[in-house]
Image (cartoon, rainbow, N blue to C red; front, side, top):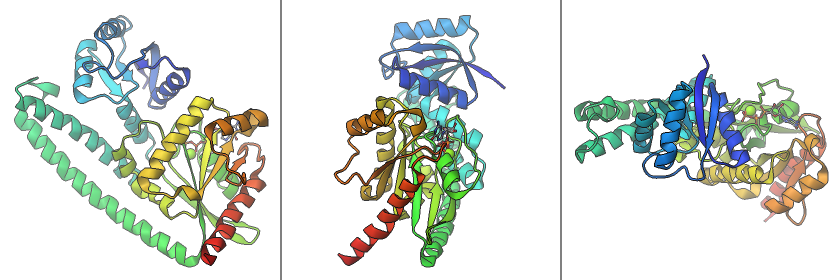
Amino acid sequence: MIKSALLITYPIKHIADEAKSLAESAGYSVIRTVTQKHLTRSKFGIGKGKADDVSQLAKSLDIEFVVFDEVLKPTQQYNLAKLCETDIIDREKLILEIFRLRSNTEESRIQIKLAELHYEAIRIKEKVRLSKRGEQPGFFGLGKYDADVHLLDIKRRISILRKKLLREEKRKLLQRTSRARSGFPTASIIGYTSVGKTTLFNLLTGESKLVGIELFTTLSTSSRVVNIDGNKIMFSDTVGFISKLPAYMIDAFKSTLQELIFSNVILLILDISQSYEMIKKQLSSSFTVLIHLGVSMGKIIYVLNKMDLVNPEEAMEKCKQLGILNEGNNNFVMISSKTGLNINVLLNTICSKIFVDTMKADNN
Ligand SMILES: Nc1nc2c(ncn2[C@@H]2O[C@H](COP(=O)(O)OP(=O)(O)OP(=O)(O)O)[C@@H](O)[C@H]2O)c(=O)[nH]1
Ligand SMILES: [Mg+2]
């Protein structure tokens, strides 16, 4: 079912493009895009004049949803919904909707449910807060008593799901411990959504996991052991990152991402065919997640993927600008997961990082 949408985003190409891809990945058909420099104004996110324009447009084009490319506070979302007489899908909700569409394992379903309940709880808390101050009676169609009961119910459901996830984490920990005992070093493939993580995983492992131009094709981790010149290494493909991912969503995916903390090497994939601004955004979003999880930066190998789409000089220039080149130039590799370019160089870099660096650490 196609849902017609009006998209409100920033007047910056790479941001607007990403917002449109996100909306489409969630099943919306973007009929019209409205851009604004500021999307964090207090009442509607956008200014009142622009909000009126959007409302008119939505009505005249008979649009069902307004997709708003920022995380909105519940009151802003409510004000805009009332003015436009449509549902408002903010960035957070959009990501949740995509995750829900793609979740295909029991674990990812629990993770999504948890994130959705969190989203709902924040909105109900806001309702309770406002009704205590005597404002906005009937906010979101709920009375104060109903809201309190609903909130209690959500808290109860959250705690049940957390316990389920915890059991899953413990199970994974056991798996990891047995893997550690079997002695395989591990390399995790991470990075912004759609940079080509699964394409690389498939190439390295001979797997045929789903690859796609849409955002968030992969939602659960896959791992596979590969024999490289007699050395066995376990590779893991992971869920992609995106900018403005709320911390609670990273937490919801913790059991999936925890793999990273235990990895010997982190392959941080960047799509070098993107603009410098976009790559910078990919990089800082990846850092945010790694820091949140407490992963050591020393384990990173920067993998610049999609080299078949750019020339080497341009790629080098972007790396310099990004500041990811080190003196020995041994922490980055330029590859193409599509053509296989430089995959051997990547494998050598991984092996030397795992085996040489580990030996160095052992000797110290
Ligand atoms: N030209 C080119 N395209 C590539 C390369 N690697 C991946 N792609 C394409 O990029 C798109 C995304 O690839 P995926 O492997 O699904 O990316 P991902 O990082 O796993 O994405 P998510 O799981 O959605 O986060 C697909 O259309 C791939 O065919 C490459 O080296 N060159
Ligand atoms: Mg993937």
